[in-house]
Length: 100
Length: 177
Image (cartoon, rainbow over all chains, first blue to last red; front, top):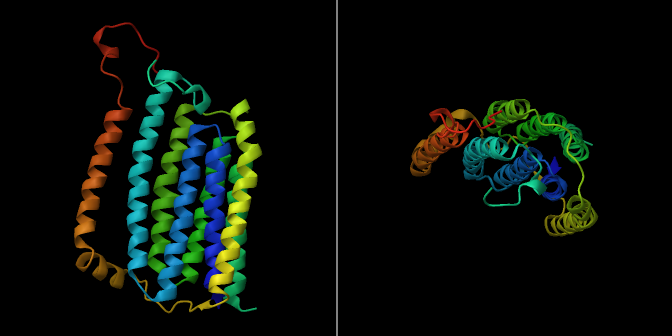
């Protein structure tokens, strides 16, 4: 049997890795992948708590998180393509003006 | 050491290694592949927790659909190795110690508060039948609202990623690549 706290520590570590990637990465696609990593860390704690408290609603929430992540990645990647068309760069340090 | 704990540690090691590799790599395609490894290992963790359907959906939707979208965009935009700048060096200097401190604090609080209370593996029915009954009875309204969200996201993606309407109308030729 695995203690609940081990799952929570793993989930917290994945979330922290996502935050670190969000801070230190300069490629806009990698920053976006760090956000996905954070969502995955949260999903793990949802499932772990669902198993711990015998509440199936926790697993349902994971589906909603996945749906929102899918919608977010579709829109976000479209925005990345639009940014690349106008700026011709993926470096976030060079995307610092609201208007060209 | 039980079999569950060994499997948890094995999948967890893959998760941790993939997450660190995502940060260490400079090319986005390598980061994407390590993120796929993290998601596949997380599906194993879900199986250990008795959430079979969530594990299957994790592999199909996350490691399949979403990551294919990422890899497709990386290849479409021909993303190269990222360069370091002044701002990113400052972020490395302050970000990594801060995040390490925060995660150690969270781990300490969680281990203190929850102790080593075990999760009963496979005790919760996570099969598609039970999930579906719950999804279409108690969570019917959120489910329907989700479909509207997906529709809006599809339309937004199409509008954003389509070519700007000024370029084909004989205006000044914009470099669209």
